[in-house]
Image 1: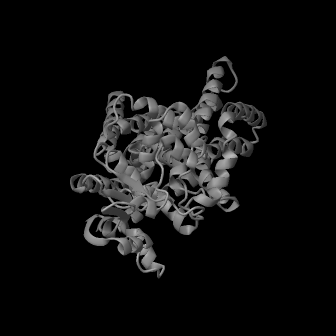
Image 2: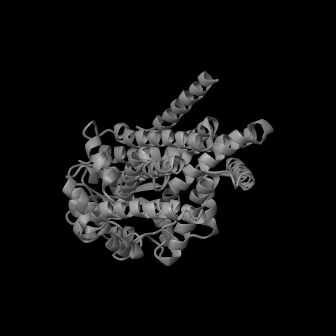
Image 3: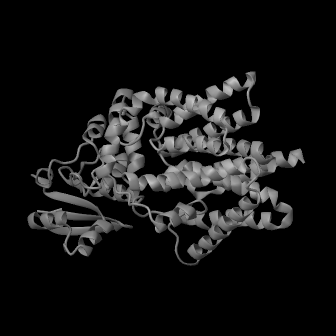
Length: 490
């Protein structure tokens, strides 16, 4: 029996590694990836300046800064997140084992291994796998302390709780919401001494995170005006539930099948959790799976919206453990196999769409940049409508003569702060007139959706294209999926 479990464990990690490495060197990057790359290339002091003006703490950028000394190829850059994701997988399996047995831990691990949400973030140059690792490790230490109780052996677990909590705080500004959920769990259990001890630990964590916390008021002020996330409603909640099981967007029969399988998983897990509601550990995991979305939902109406699926990575992991637990618990009653098939089926039918996705914001930048490289002559200008296409293109070829137009000041898209620009030495053009002055040929790079948005508003032509049309003649047009390149010549 033990040999079979070891084989299952090995197969889970091999599968997880394969799914995370597939396409890691070829899958398109997008603005956020490229932002991380260019910021991480700077000195540690510049990284701090750049992140202080942005909305994320600097820990991931520090790690990427040193990691890229190995190599700056896209495959190697993404390996950092892949390794963090595999470490998270190991923590999930062991947490499931300690709460519900090795079978539950292994099934939870399999769910995480194939989950498109986890694979997506394992292939990003962003801090979300680091956040997930820090938060689930914090939870692991909390559970171990609950299981051990008072004793000499507990000392190192308290240290681990402080370390992983601090790590989470320096990973993402939403980390605090996940860290306080165990407090609610202890309050519901009337474990007053435990609450006091945990609050004491969290005071230490806040003290260690204080150098960064002083930056947060300015960042909160920024997201009040400069971020595009809408206030959550039923649609956003349903999307978050679906993303716990499959990749979005999907179309046609695959979408219908994915929704049905996701609903099957959600309903079955909910029913089994209700039956097991008095089982130790179920309440804690349920609170993590449901409490974090509720907190972010409520906070989104108290301040600027922050309800985004990537901020729910701890909830997704807790839900996977609950799913694995229910599969193992009901395996001999046929509910378990059906639930396992639904979890794995939902993931697998949507993975082809994930690997082939090449639309906004992850458009076909590499092919477009190759075209620009082959057609741009000395003295030409490549002008990007905004930073979202410029950053990926600049990553693929930093030598091309490229500029980008600034976001409208104060708009929801105005997220690229001056301090970040200064840290990376990547500045928008002062104006359209200044950018094209003296140029005979201009290639304008714009997303199809931007052109459509102006048409939908009744503005007719994109204003930049209208101005270019007044000063130049349109001589060519190429499309790379939803990324378009218009050539203007005098």
